[in-house]
Amino acid sequence: MNCVICRNGKVDPGSTTVTLEREGRVLVVKGVPARICENCGEEYLDEAVSNHLLQMGEEAAMIGVKADVRDYVAA
Image (cartoon, rainbow, N blue to C red; front, side, top):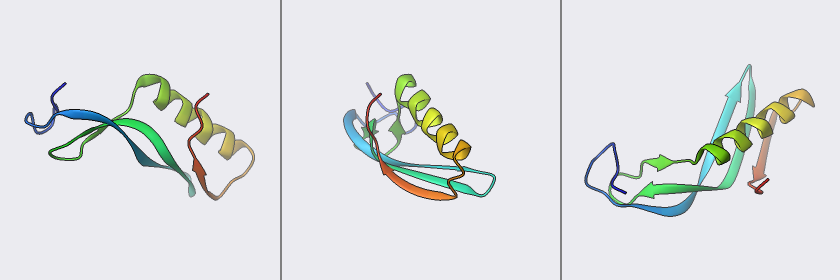
């Protein structure tokens, strides 16, 4: 797959860090599986990974987390 942003780079498997922010709460998730453009660095997440991250964010908000850093663990 070629990058849809720069249209030149090849997109390869890798990992990234995702930061979720809502209403003054911050959740940082490291080691998130992604596809990353070798040219511009644009990051693409699969739908299942995105859904899992949003679920992690909801759970953190429900227990009152203000700020947290976590490693990604597949569902």
